[in-house]
Image 1: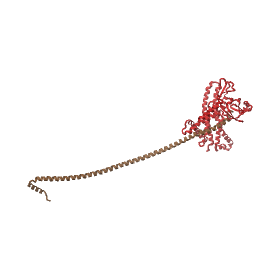
Image 2: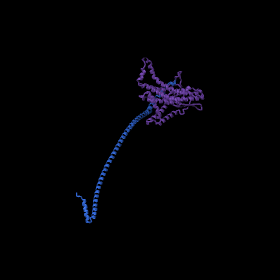
Image 3: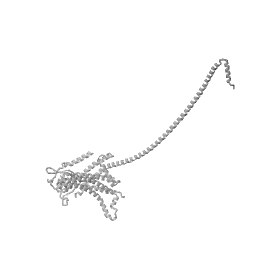
Length: 363
Length: 164
């Protein structure tokens, strides 16, 4: 079973990379100008945002041609004509909307990691002054992007680690052994010290799967995001949005009478209702909204700081700034490791707290 | 700004992947791991209760043992006392019967001795009588060889005999 899984993963990786095996494509617009101005903002934004291929590094060969080494990822689009799929290497690393990929009679370009479908007759992307495309539309894009790929990687990791732990727990009851001995205390900690004190002993069982999964999902993806050239998944607002929407839904669907009574009939003089009720209603949303922003901002900010410190070397164009940068980056990295755990903990803790507030019995 | 605009693709994939992950992990990991922990907690609790019970039982047993020991000791003492009494009785009985027997033996011995003595005395008397008769005969024979002497003697004898 394990072996089969390993082979499947291996063959998927091989399949993906064989399309662009060496993944060394000539940059078409390479102007042989190595002295081009270093733009740190662009570099940082490129690193913290999503991409359609897993880019590892660039190198310049002896002829002065720039090559990019990257893992191509599948692009899945829903256009007016239905589903269209192709690998991201079809764009040949072009990201300014000039390289056109034709599939099923539809023409696609990639501009700043977004796929546009060109209208009939157009050969390259054009924008108006508000940055809206003039001659193209955006199809529904559910591509396996770098972030999605990283998320799937974390899922494989989580399933293999916790699958092994679960099997071990099922096979030999009694004292935990091996990987279970390491993971079980963490799971028990989440249940005993996060879920039960906040949700309450009586009803906590129902919320264990969500809260424990959300903890490990965030924690693993935070750590994966810290690996150099890794994806910034938990620093992406879409991911934190989805997770906080889950918390919002669970909180409000499991809420009892007292919770709604507190919102619509708060214990204040009736004259204050016009102010209080809207505030309470907004309060329903602000709590998960804060969850979303907190995780997104913490992780993204950490990445930006590290990348900014690295950029200093290139901004100053001096080797002597490197030790300072490296020292600070090392410090930040250690801090980020802590933040990775801390943010997973906080997200789980606050989710448990919100659920607990919504279901608590009133005295 | 791009950074704070959630992309549809990632929302879609995160929702799908997270829900599937949650269901899988619930089945594969959380349920068995936490069931295992709960079962262990329960067994530890039971073991503690059982140990407590065992300790109580132990102390009960100890008390019982002490009581039994005490009883046994008392019984032993009683038995010893009884044995001592029996011994004294037996000894005194034996002494008494021995004394009786001895008295009896002594009495019969005394009787036998008495009989023997009387027999011996009577025999002695007889033999003394016979001897004295013989001696007297011999003396008389010698004395009474002539008739004068015989007469003298008869006279002598007659003198001694008092006719009462």
